[in-house]
Image 1 (cartoon, rainbow, N blue to C red):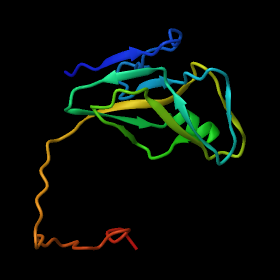
Image 2: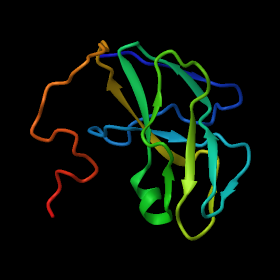
Image 3: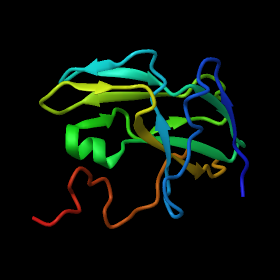
Image 4: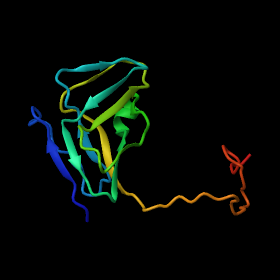
Length: 148
């Protein structure tokens, strides 16, 4: 088990620390720590503060992902999803939201806007090579293995 430390930033006592909404949930819900309601017009994007910073072990990364209900009901999703928070980042966690829906969407203080999932980061070494081993697939990509 890994320990992740959360620091509530000043002025955010009313914002909940990220938490799972059910026993078996993979993601911890994140709330908007906006000072006043923000309206996100269709096609617009905005960086939404969460009111906390964190420290996690070097073996972890945190991934920011959309909430399925917001995506389905309103077209609100996260850009660069999943967004990665590295273990050495100590600034405020923010969520990059975009409105892909057809109506403006208002984000209010305390609203659940995204979820955060922790993943282990494997230790990897990179080695340059003159040749790569062959595979059946080879260099085929972008639908190459799909059924026609």
